Length: 377
Image 1 (cartoon, rainbow, N blue to C red):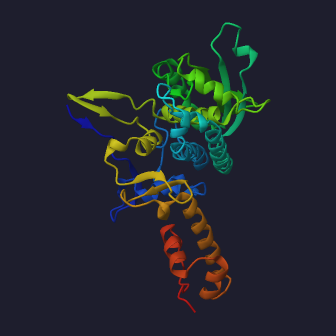
Image 2 (image 1 turned 180 degrees about the vertical axis):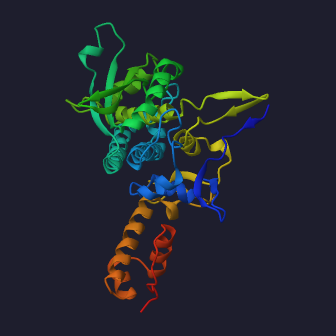
Image 3 (image 1 turned 60 degrees about the horizontal axis):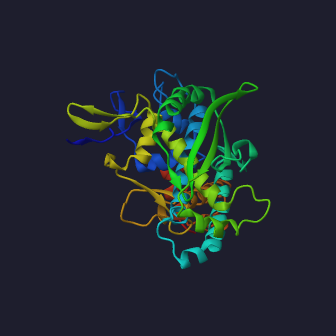
């Protein structure tokens, strides 16, 4: 049996000389632009005309709706990228304890705490969801004879109306099927959740509560005794528990958005196809690495943040989204200074970017220099 990868996602790239629309595959540059919080309305409307973004069964989306959905995608990707380095912290083997491992318990908690500060900054910057600490090992969840259960976090995601309609069926599919098909373990916890769409004062939201139920494996006992001694009094949720909860949250969000891309057999071959909407295909493009894509998504080796690159063997700093945002901001400042009558050399010095680099970024973003000379001097 062969594997049929995801079909390449096509977007509208203007008209040809005869006025016929040109549909071309989404490029790495397009993907970087879509994941940028400052993506322009015109760019979104141009790539996804009509009902294509959410599909014909949901309806036409305006740029505000599309930007809301794209922010959730960007935040989820960035969480997964930043959590990738935390796997070693929450994937310990209970059957292979040794003294050095136990001695590292305090150090591991400190490392997790530091990584959490970075991830909180990312979530705050994206402004696409809010995350609150859960109530911990609340008495409501823990009867005298029950397995200890921790309410790790509560996530709240504001939605636009059309995005909410698109999510409605996927939340139903997830709660009916997907949640029953997963029981992931992180550290000493089995992770599970409650996911629901609600509406408050006419504003739709997606709410997710993440819980962890302690495993009963005897191998965890020695580690847990040592670990609990590191947790200060009054701490409801430890750093390691929160890292595990954030990874589960990111997994839920990705699963929700991919839930209609159901694997099927078509003409005797195993296939994984998108639904009739560009948003599902966009998530597939970011998460289905078997689709033979010409891009790579990873973690910047300098700042640890998300990058989208075109060279799979190169390191990611040149395509780092964090770096790209800074460079784009400086190039726009450079352009404003030039338009005000300042020389290219002086504008380059004030904006903190070379003339050549600023021009390349501005042209890549569709900026028309309108005859302005960017030569030095």
